[in-house]
Image: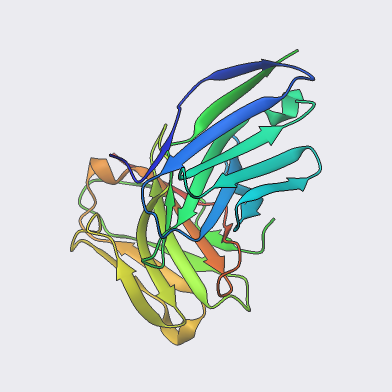
Amino acid sequence: QKEVEQNSGPLSVPEGAIASLNCTYSDRVSQSFFWYRQYSGKSPELIMSIYSNGDKEDGRFTAQLNKASQYVSLLIRDSQPSDSATYLCAVYSSASKIIFGSGTRLSIRP
Amino acid sequence: DTGVSQDPRHKITKRGQNVTFRCDPISEHNRLYWYRQTLGQGPEFLTYFQNEAQLEKSRLLSDRFSAERPKGSFSTLEIQRTEQGDSAMYLCASRRGGDEQFFGPGTRLTVL
């Protein structure tokens, strides 16, 4: 079992719709959770961080965390073509390092 | 631009040669990380520094790899006797304490 798992996609969503990205993790003592966006050939760019159960909203982005289910999600409202990218889920483990999932490719179709 | 810089941005080398990459973190960030990323995968943790101390080292990091962070400022990652399997994007990231981690632009290594 991978430490951080994501569906590789591609996930295709029409412009203006909500894109929903999911991530599960295995280390129950994980404390901090991050979503990064990565365009092809570029380095990851931090979008959201979440530390406690529930929802956290920032503009069109909402991160959701459920520690009991070991599940993190990212919702993107009013999806735009510029949102087309790979989204990486990252989990701060107990060993002072951040573990990344393999990423989900998101494609927003006009 | 996150404030983390890496040099060079691209490196092409022949198998068996040594290469060295540099990372300059955001100045007030005491934690520095090196990752390797190949196509279709997320970044894989290589090593982690808190100030000048190397606190974690992945088992992915063979003895051909070495990293330093003298004086707790910039860091270097050296790969000796490069192999074609070392071709990847090498990413550096920094963070202050438990805050978010910010990535540099990466160094793309191609081993011929």
